[in-house]
Length: 321
Image 1 (spheres, helix red, strand yellow):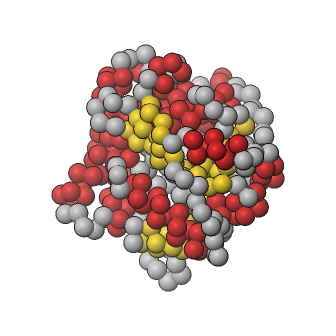
Image 2 (tube, helix red, strand yellow):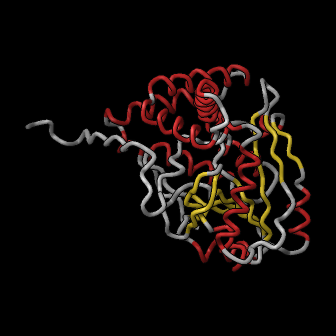
Image 3 (cartoon, rainbow, N blue to C red):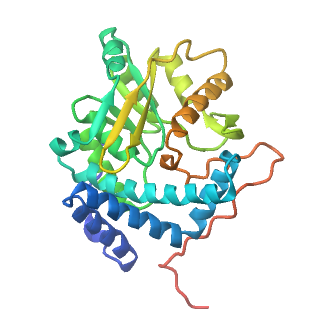
């Protein structure tokens, strides 16, 4: 496990970081508000993202059109709006993860079928909890660790301020935190009959991926779950988290360990995990992270599906001609 690096806040006082600090302050204030107000606040933030985030809105529209062709154009756009509202709520839920009180969070969640985890551990078997990037992902990670020992992998964020607070929460809540390149340490931890949570549903390129269907579209799909299970002999236990309507809170549900996994091939396993993920997503499609360019990597000869990402403005460069 990589040690957390010191955070020198005074290195991030330049004007380009002010929006991050303001956002962080708003998130900190949101945590002390009643849950109903928190959700309303997140809904409003998400609607603002929908109105102002032209590029990401186009990404979501493309994904929804590809994955839900059975919907009318009007229904697709309604789903796009609902997704941004869910993203805004997810931002508030990140704050709840960072600063929320454990006793208050426990009142919000119902955890189903945790016995699948307990039974595998009693057998002395390591476990890989197979998650995905739902908009509730950060808060569900906190729910999982309230009374249980889990580890997680991580990838650094571009924003150093938010990266620090995300990592601070993970080091505080998880038993172990592994960088994605700490493969041996992760395998050793699983083989000691421990639990590691992974979400391997995003497009990271063709390396260690297979092109298999995802909502009827070929998508570069990571094969990390198969490779980890083969080496560690771990049980693969899928789970799903969902935000319920109104102020009902959240449900997290675990499912039976996958049988005959890994199977005969990495491609076969990737098809299987995508099918499981699709079944979960369809229960609340607005709560999956459609802002991600899921179909960015294309099979050879196929056209790109997304417009070119806008270039980031380097504010440190001189504006002189």
